[in-house]
Image 1 (spheres, rainbow, N blue to C red):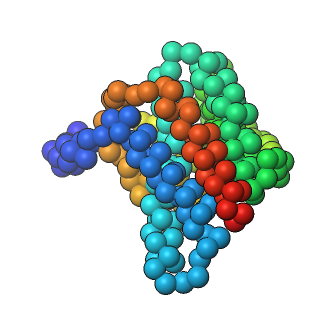
Image 2 (image 1 turned 90 degrees about the vertical axis):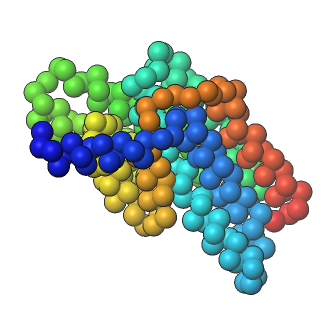
Amino acid sequence: MTKTTIQQRKGFDKIRVLSGAQLKYIAFLSMLIDHVNKALIYPNLNGGIMLQISNLFDILGRIAFPLFAFFVVEGYFKTKNRTKYLLNLIIFGIISEVPFDMFTSATFYNPRFNNVMFSLALCLITIWIIDTLKTKMPRILWYIISLLIVAIMCLVAMFLAVDYDYYAIIIVYFLYIFYDKPVLSVILGYITIIKAFWSFLGFGFILTYNGERGKQSKILNYCFYPVHLLILGALRMYLKI
């Protein structure tokens, strides 16, 4: 390794200052800002200061999903029980669906759009299948098969109308394939969803991860999503907006 490469690596290490807990709570705050904007501000936009606030919230709200996508991959590699992890995503997806429908459409049930917990569950299933096949075939064939699996899961995500649909599958795939090359993984992930321009903020935060879990609350991690959606959905229905 050249002296220049070593210096570059040391320079890159200097930005790895945030734990998994800190990044997760940044993602929660970003999600809350985004959802407040969509549930309560969007319906009342009439220009002026409210439009400026909404535009700012749109920017800050793009931080969340890249981080949640990253933690699916991180969770896959580091969880002690992948089956339990997947079941938790599915169970909380079911729990979150009514609050999600209240939040998005001011109704108690809307089968045309399903929440992000199901998206993350599909992402986890995708990389789990691909990773299981990794040692069972030649590497080139494995890459080809993995792309086929991604294509199939993208179709499944679109059919189920989950939040972020096929974008979620592709982003998590890149984060998994280039897990040991974080800069490349976030560049490809960002290109996948470049239409959400400000999402580069979320991908940038991924590069600050120091590999430490940090002190986390499992209850908060899983309950934040359905609870805040329920509150915002109830407010939207009460205010009839």
